[in-house]
Length: 165
Image 1 (cartoon, one colour):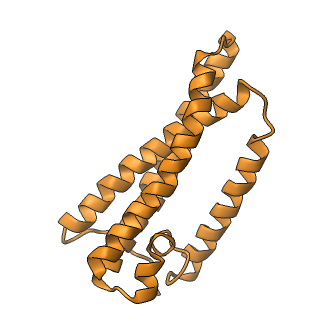
Image 2 (cartoon, rainbow, N blue to C red; image 1 turned 180 degrees about the vertical axis):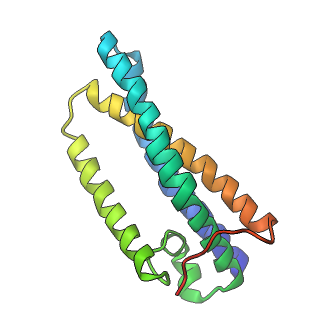
Image 3 (cartoon, rainbow, N blue to C red; image 1 turned 135 degrees about the horizontal axis):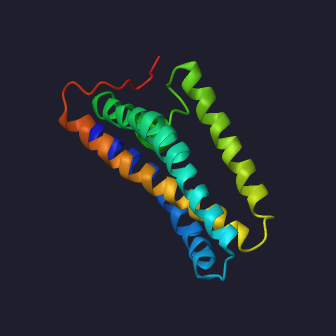
């Protein structure tokens, strides 16, 4: 049951992030194909670099991915029916996590939903420019999640906490 829960949790989190990448990539590509001004090209480059550092490196690689990988490993070793059934939310820290992790997970989700709504009102090509940076950060995040999950299962001294109570 632990292997099933870990696989479901890992694949479910990947599906959520991957779905966002699939949805945003066409708009990002539209912006790349558009006749952008030099200012817009510069802004896109700066925005992509900013998102790679802030979302990809600082958000995913330094926080979300190591914690999620540790929770995937924890789930493989401590399965319950509820954790296995709800493995993706468990791995993202929505329940059976310390208070800070639960609060951060919920606030981050609400913030992302708010940003998605606000960005939906931004006109072309600006929306595509924004989406290009988000896609870059999410792709870094997926790669880091795969790397940390691999390490969680192959390194007996995996140094990251699952933030469980």
